[in-house]
Amino acid sequence: MKGGKVHQTCACHSRSSVLNSLVIMNDPVSNSLSVKGCFEPQERRLQNPLENLELTCGYLLEEDVKCLSQYPSLGYLKHLNLSYVPLFHISLEPLGALLEKVAATLETLILEGCQIHYSQLSDILPGLSRCSQLTIFYFGRNFMSMDALKDLLGHTSGLSKLSLETYPAPWESLNSLVRVDWEIFTPLRAELMRTLRKVRQPRRIFIGPAPCPSCGSSPSKELELHLCC
Image (cartoon, rainbow, N blue to C red; front, side, top):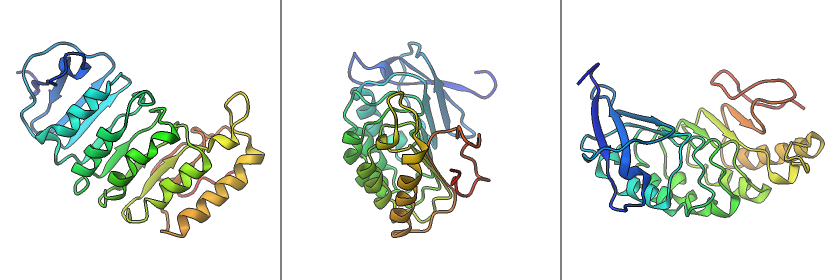
């Protein structure tokens, strides 16, 4: 043991699972796990409960996400970060199950850049809507239609503690180069804000590309509303 770090392993039952070889850096003080990029082989199972789980810039199979949803040690997560892990190719039902499992404790959910398609959204909405302790929700850089974003916002009606949230521009506002057409996007964003305000009053919200190509701003706790034209 060096620097207070304990090496443990999140071993899954499926041999094809990359989490079968995931190296976990478990800090007994902060109850945190952080892994970026490739995964190296280990053999021992995860034992200690975790509050923080970060799996970023890597690749997960559906079996991996299912594995995570079944681990007792992840039942009290406060922070879940899967940023830039492509999820478009798998069912998100296991992720939805994990969200339901941690709904009473989850405070931060980062699904930024996961390439989630609007057709997958229904798998996570029930679990997300129950995360009553959620304060930060990053969902930018996913492929969402206008109807899907409205549905997503409607399911956040019970998330009264949200203090920072981000969402992508709807695909209807993207041009042939997959860039935002601001003339189309601006009224759509206003419509999304009206939809949201019917169910709750947002605090800090960022809808659209990040950083904003018009003003250069990015989501932050200091930014209240991103409404540049």
